[in-house]
Length: 144
Image (cartoon, rainbow, N blue to C red; front, side, top):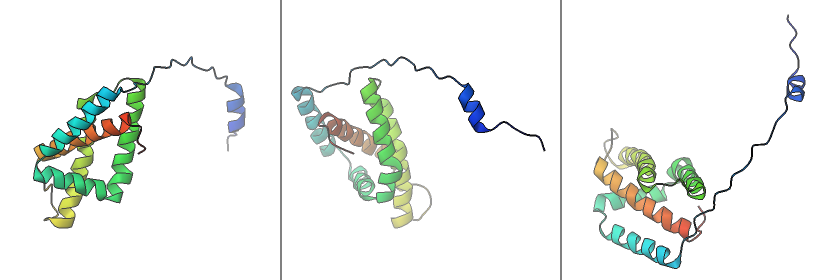
C-alpha cells in the first residue's frame, strides 16, 4: 500500500496571499427613487393579469418555493446590487425560473399534474412584478 503524505503536510507548504479588495460603493436610493419604485409597484399590480396575480400569491405563500428558490435568488440579487452589476432584465429572467417551478407545483396541486398551468407570458409578468417588489424592498432596506 503506497503511503501518501497527510493532508496537514500539504496545507503547511502552501502560502496564501490575500487579494487586494476593491470596494464598490453600494447604491443608495434617494427618496425620489423610492417613491418612483413604489409608484411602479402600484402600476404593475394594477396591470397584472388575474392568472399572474394568482401565481404570485401562490409563490409568496408556498414555504418550499420560498426556501428553495426565493431566498437564494434574493441573496444573489442583493449581492449584485451591492457590487453595482445589477440588471433588471436579467433579474426578471432569474425570477422567471422561480415562477416556472411554482407553476409546476401549482399544477400538481390544483391541475392535471402535467406541465404548467400558466402561460410563459403570465409567468414573465409575475416575475417582472416580483423584481419591482424586490427592488423596492432593497431600497427600503427590508430584510429577506
